Length: 270
Image 1 (tube, rainbow, N blue to C red):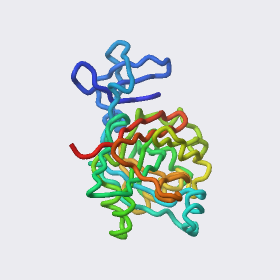
Image 2 (tube, rainbow, N blue to C red):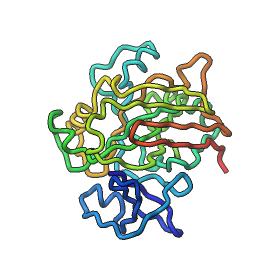
Image 3 (cartoon, rainbow, N blue to C red):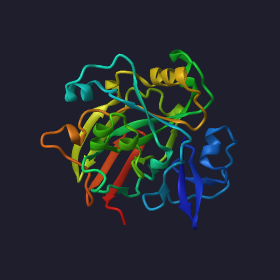
Image 4 (cartoon, rainbow, N blue to C red):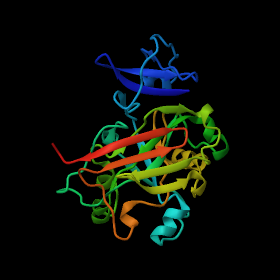
């Protein structure tokens, strides 16, 4: 089942595709559905597309995982991590799958893309074992963990570099876990100005989704609606020669099998 937040008749509503390809509205907000509210489709068929798709919802907490793809670590010339590299991604950075990504050249000149699978937590979890972790996952979204590499390097930690406004496009929809039986077998691609720059697979994850959920729950209580960003495959702009960066006027698109495609125009501050 796919769930989305759309702009319809001037309001934001939750839309549901239960598998027949026809989207219908429910008056229950998507985050409440994640938290276990009953699903009641009340509206008739809806047109759902780039013109009205918003970020599915704003997660309460976002956990990011760095250096989690073998090909990415090899591309950087680093050693494989012995445990997940964990950082916070601010909820205020969330934006829609077709909304502008704002890059201020006075703040960063090395903004970069990172196409990622976002894991949506479906129930409260604390110290869960990897073998039980996937049972607590509600679903998955496509995400772009936009990153200011120069701010990351200057700070030594990643809060500023990962947390700028609009630096976390989510969507276009949330796909429930029953539709994704194996999150370790999804193709992940990114285009910048029409050029394919990332072409990887979640098979290359060092720590799989179940391991990541268990690891995060070891240190923190995971709650319904929380999101874990699971890392990105090789092909980020900052590790290329010559280096590439997201600049105003450019367009970044990411696509993850079964999770949908985003298209964000890069803009300067208005």
